[in-house]
Image 1 (cartoon, rainbow, N blue to C red):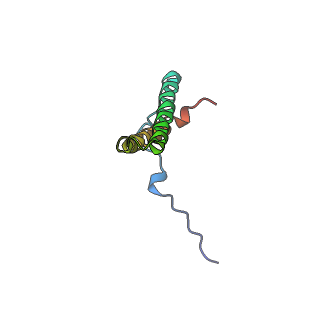
Image 2 (cartoon, rainbow, N blue to C red):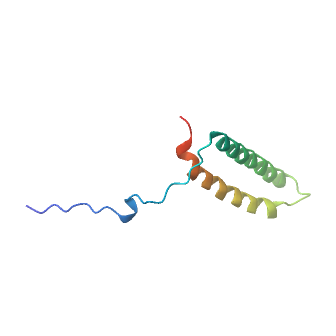
Amino acid sequence: MPEKKEARVPDHAYPTDTPNVVIEDPQIREIVYTVLGWAGVILTAAVAADAVAPAFDISAFTQPAFAVYGVFAAAVGRVARKNIPA
């Protein structure tokens, strides 16, 4: 009968002593999510207006703005996702 080998747990699976960064205040979470939401709406409207209007080209501003928005939204989502009240 072949021997059973124990499953090896990867090193990154163990908890560390580094505390998680969390946004604990629900009012701050609400403010941050509201600001991110409106920033997304405004950027989307700006891109749509830029696509329709041949008179101006603001893609030099909207593309980097969307990149920054995406990184910031992802970071906030990682920080606050476990704090969202049920």
